[in-house]
Length: 238
Image 1 (cartoon, rainbow, N blue to C red):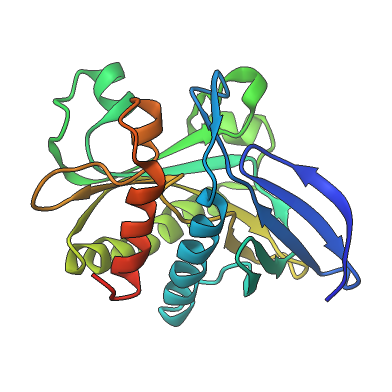
Image 2 (image 1 turned 90 degrees about the vertical axis):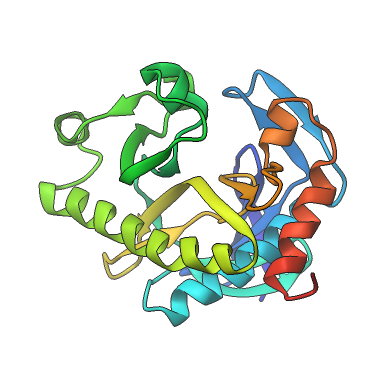
């Protein structure tokens, strides 16, 4: 597969065209950002860890009937996947209250929610990724009709139903996570982007230690060590 010109560069990845119009290559970067890009840094090896973690989790989800854009991991930092039209809605799935949910609504940090909460954010850095309700999504024409919003919620819950018990078995609480979706060349809604400690919160079940990008957000240090521990648990090395 030939890697061609740069199509798009985001905070964590570069996207390249290929010699197949239906396939693109993502290059996972070592860059770190938080607070809508206000805090920036870089950690060597972070991109490769996210690529490897995402590869394993996409394979797991595909095996459980959830369609994704994943095709193959090409090398440590490159993933081949389907080209999609990205839906500009970030789907947030929450099992335990923390972060903005606790700050904005006063819910005790660490409180297990009575049911899985699914929220929508507008994927728009200039506006600070504001919260959306269904009517906002329709007014902004982010989806074509209500059924697509219902499908995003349903797929997000299906992802959670696979990942939450999976991580519990390897000693991690899946606190919350962000998902992105897109439409493939046939118009099917599929899971895209990545699933990694960059967009998931993992807390060690026994110690409560944070094993995700909160280590960068909160200045805790040891980010790549934590990411590597997550990967090793996924691979059964711990």
